[in-house]
Length: 340
Image 1 (tube, one colour):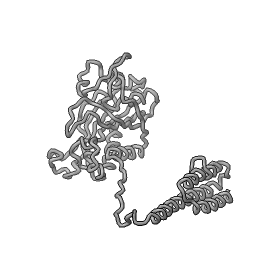
Image 2: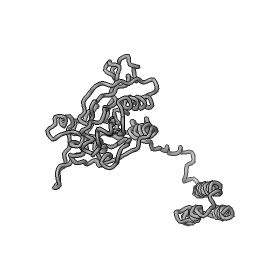
Image 3: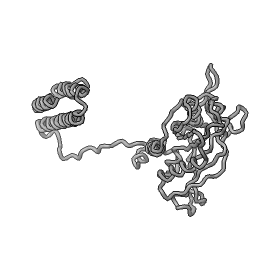
Image 4: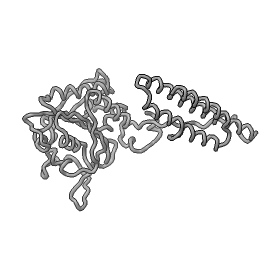
């Protein structure tokens, strides 16, 4: 195998120096660097290499690929310079080069990736589900009866077709139901995704937003584990000195339920305009899974318990980066995006 690598390197080096026309460069690329080229064929032979030799041979192949690619690029640049010099004064070499723009990850993507990193690091998996959800998974199985007033808490986009009523999901909680329907305990996942609510667009609200929910179900899961998990998350995301507090709240699918606040990261809890002089900032809702929800998915609430939590990615990003208008995330203004 090493002899073949050296032979290919020698042949490629010899041919690169002879490349002149665009056809020459394309033929060389197809011959050596394409998906069916000679270099790819050598990589396919790796499966026949003895196991103890694979690391060394793999390293040699990667070095060969890097060598050929770099020499190929160098020859193209050299040939371009040769052609430019032949054209004489038509090219003004004193003109400054064009500024190159490099893409970046959107701040919401950066925030979501950081959230994923934290939770997968403590054993959570990642699950996904449909954005067009049926009423059962979006409401009923989450302990929202048809006439329950809690449905008024969420302004829903309804989608109707011949098969019945569907909605643009108002939260990713429906994925919790789908995960539990298809998996036996223990279950430990986060569920990121887009959600939709029929709200007036303003600096604090948008008709589409991104959410991450989490679910942990097993035997003897306690409220203390929920508080520990959320406190760990807050410290990982906002800094080890950040404080957390849990305020009693209400959600149909958890009991007891709580809102989670962190000490204001802008004023250190002293009180400022951003925290409305309270010293605290709300980051998410959470609670212990209501036994009625377990009954919908076939879990025995006498055997298992669990907790759930949910947060808006936009809100987390706004707090993390000090952004005061949610609309900036959706306007694609490069002046804003280039800051991240």
